[in-house]
Image (cartoon, rainbow, N blue to C red; front, top):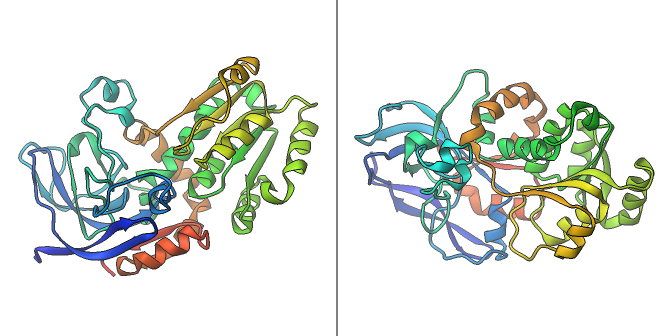
Length: 354
C-alpha cells in the first residue's frame, strides 16, 4: 500500500487544495484506520471556508464519511478489518457522564473531525480515535450512499424536529403552525422529520429557488424571505389568529435567521436551533422574558441517537435521493466547494476511489 494519500486541505478562506499527505497510522490503542468510501461536504464547513469562523489552516477537511476498516488498535474488540462503518462528525468515548446520559456531542474527550486538532474524512484514509465509542457498523436496509447522511445531517435534522415538538402533546402538534428557516441539506432532513408530527401548517423559508421547489415537492408551503418577508409575516399571523408560530426550527446558523424566527414566534413558542452560530444572539434578556421564550440550541449528539435516527432514515431515504445528484471524485473537491458555496447544488458527495 502507498504511504501517501490524496486529501482536501484547508488553506484559508475560500481556498482548499488537493495535497499528498501521509496515510494515517494507529496512534492510540483505541484507534482504527478507515479507507473512505464516501465523504460529503457539510454546510457547517462553509462557516470556515467563507472565513466566518476563524480557523488555523493546513488540516484535512471533512466530518461526514463512511468507509471500510483497514487497521485496528490493540484495544478495539467490537470492530475488525473489512467492516463497513459510518462515523458521527465528532468522536465520543462512550464512558464519560455526557456519553452515558445521551449527550455524546459534549463528550469530555470529544474531537470534531476536520479541524486543526483532528484531520477529517475528505481523504482516502482517516484515523478515528476512541473508535468503540464513536463509529457504528453499517446496518442493513440503508443504501450505501445514503449512509453518509448518518454522519451528521440526517440525525441533526431529526434532532432539530424532535426538539421543536418534544413539549407538545400529539393534539397540540397536529394543531401547530411551524416555520422552518433554512432549506439546505440539514433543513430538508429536518423537513422530512417534521412531517411525522403532522403539523396543521408548515411554512418552509429560504431564498434559493431550487431549495424552495424541493421543499414544495416534499409537502411544505414555501416562502422566499428575501423577496416577500412582509408576506411571510402576514401569512403566519393569518394562520394563527395573530399569535405567531408555535414552533420555529432554525438551521441557518446566522443571527438574522434567529431574529426572524424570534419575530415570527408567538409568546411561549419554541425555537429549536441547530445552526452553527458565531455571532451574538439577536435578542435581549428582556425580550426573551417578555415573550416567555423557549429555546433549544446546540450540536446534535449523533452517536447517542444513532439507532433512532437510523430507523427514521430507513423510512425516509426514498425522499432524499436528490442529495446524491452531485457525486464527484475527490480530486475535484475545489470545484465541489465552489458549487456548494454558491448554492448551485443541494449537496456534494466525494468518492475518493474515483
